[in-house]
Length: 424
Image 1 (cartoon, rainbow, N blue to C red):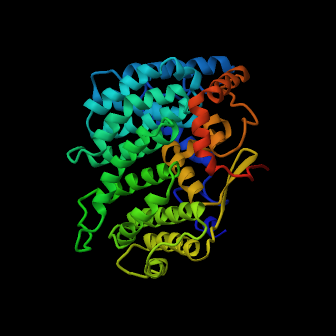
Image 2: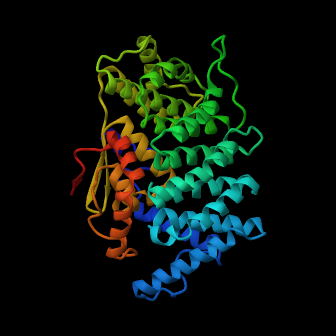
Image 3: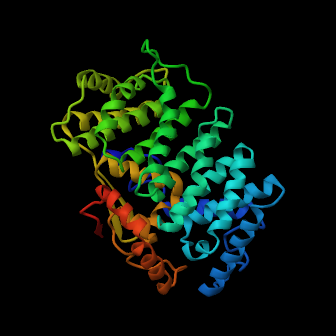
């Protein structure tokens, strides 16, 4: 497909690019050097094969040390511990280990968010999102989200906080809420309105002029818009669609390429959700929108970097094709012997959100994490992760699938399932 020739998007390579195993080994080697005391990678064995039980115990000892280090007086030690935990959370399934320690970890993360500097806040927010994915959207995840949501929101909307911390909090708020927000919707509504308060700062004023962005603002606006778009997939979309489309259309003129792309993808998603509700869905002034999309899909502006132009043209061509005749160039993500199809803007937004939080670990989680397997309609794991004894995975799954909160959320997210999830 065209996307595979382009080498994929958001780092998802096509057939020819770097494999995720290579990326994963880079990530893990990075974490092994991040901090000696807190490394989650096995160096202790000197490369000798060890039995799984011993390896598991060593990993857990290192993780315990990381959690202790989150309370250290030294900011450098705390940051190294957050980095190591992030590496472990993205590359392993640690439900059993975390279920007994989740409140300690949540408390430490909350303290880093409230008291740490910008770099520590950004790292802690990422680990919050990974923790929610690890806990799998059952009652424990919901309990953790209730503790962390207020502080994630507070940093994100604080104009004096570091931009990278605000950006990381926006992303974490979207993911934690998607995975863990209760069905009653109060957390969902609050999170969405906080995210809106951030990205609507990019909207044009009454005269129709776009504001001049401060340094770092487009990255923050993109993160908030992407997180909001993820949560939109859980909502009845009609009101949201009509409300935001005209303003978002104006933001296609933004001076920042990545923000233009985030806006284009969100417009396509809103139109898709509108069409899902009403086959006859039309929005005002679609001719002007299509003209604008055509311009971006053929942009030859020499002032822009070549890679930016290419990336923009590819994505806006897809947005234009979808708006004009509902074409979507689907992509297949392979992991182990399985694959999922990304065949709609909604599935793309959900997959990209997990990819942002788990990085190269996303394929491992698609293979083994019951939460992602449920979201993408894959059923129970085909094979077990070597770090998870079969009795343990069934314990995790039984616990998860019997939880009323999880059932309610599954119902909410059902729209994103693919009837064609297949084994290769």
